[in-house]
Image 1 (tube, rainbow, N blue to C red):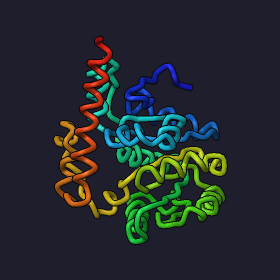
Image 2 (cartoon, rainbow, N blue to C red; image 1 turned 45 degrees about the vertical axis):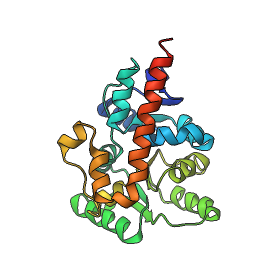
Image 3 (tube, helix red, strand yellow; image 1 turned 60 degrees about the vertical axis):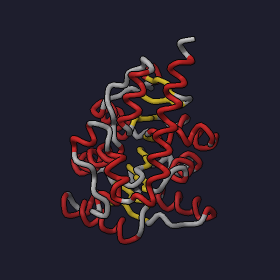
Image 4 (tube, rainbow, N blue to C red; image 1 turned 120 degrees about the horizontal axis):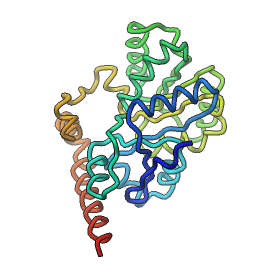
Length: 250
């Protein structure tokens, strides 16, 4: 479909699409009743993929892969494979909810705590209409429940599925259950996006997003939980990018 627009960074495939191009591909797919398995990558996920072959496979075999982190866009430029722009998962999700309202698509919301996912439904029902909701489920389940949950989503009549669960669980869930979910046109992992929509976590100001400091704003809100992911993960990412940059010069 679009593989000529793909670049590779640290064994991670990324589609070189703008937000608008990404939305166009998704809209076309839903209108043609085809399925797109979507994933976003940021510095932390790319670092995790270096040592996790299952996650690497789940990401690289997706149909559409966007760069969610500004650091990934900068890295693409350092490696002379410039990406057009960052396509943040949460921004893509909010754009698609608006399009669902315009096009009479239905969405299944899967993930986060019960009160968080209910608040997301409440927020979007008030902003648009309840008609966009195909169903919902919180993100707490056992591995043996996965097939049943995937079947429940498939039977809901949803055109879009958003999965707000942490990495690598959401990536592996979507990859392993893609066939069961084949009637859902667009399946996407959205990480902590439900927490932001529900008002549980604040999103960084636009200027911080622009300068790639969104991770730092998130770290300041939950330092105990986030220090390892961001400080260690980001340092490792920078080191790996520089290593690739200078090894290619030899």
